[in-house]
Image 1 (cartoon, rainbow, N blue to C red):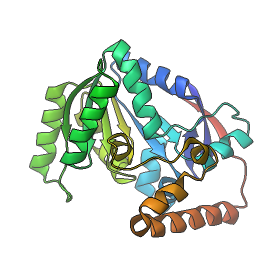
Image 2 (image 1 turned 45 degrees about the horizontal axis):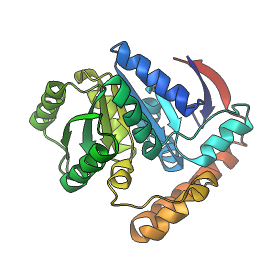
Image 3 (image 1 turned 90 degrees about the horizontal axis):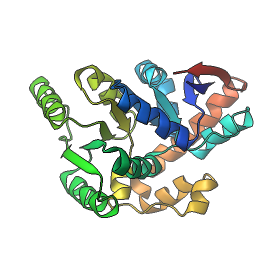
Length: 255
């Protein structure tokens, strides 16, 4: 059981990284079928514009705050130990744990080149971890036959964790749609973590991450792709909070 706080209709999980790892370990040990969404400001705004996305986040086993503004909201309203839980931090933490536990990993998303480089980096940094397969989907909707083929391929690989790097909310819709067809205990959406861990995108220094300025570092690297998204999402987020005359997140407890 872990506490959650309702922020704009999304029950964000308020827990530490160690608590998140413990929960995931329990789901794998118990052969449960869960999915985890890592939610930043952009994803939260998207959930206000699409009711299906908000429903997906509400049904997630963990709706992890991936962004310091969301962590600050949680801490400000009583959840002092809440951590930021983002893909580039969660992946190495789970890969380290998997060297002890023997978890099997599958990588889904991004490009073939990125996945090959990522597997090399994971093998170098976590030699005791097992990556049992990867798949880079085409940049178009999959046909029904292709969807069934990837489900079969994933189940044949028998992973404990499927890492999904498609970006939000695409990865969240994919996890919700495929959760029932896949045997893997845990699906985790990690956004751009594949590119960062593969060394294709540089991550911001720790001081920028802790002060909530990582988005500025990302923007400086990819201004054309990210400028519209960041400025639009950040402005909409502030306006949404202001329009509802911001109330403290409503505390809940969920499994």
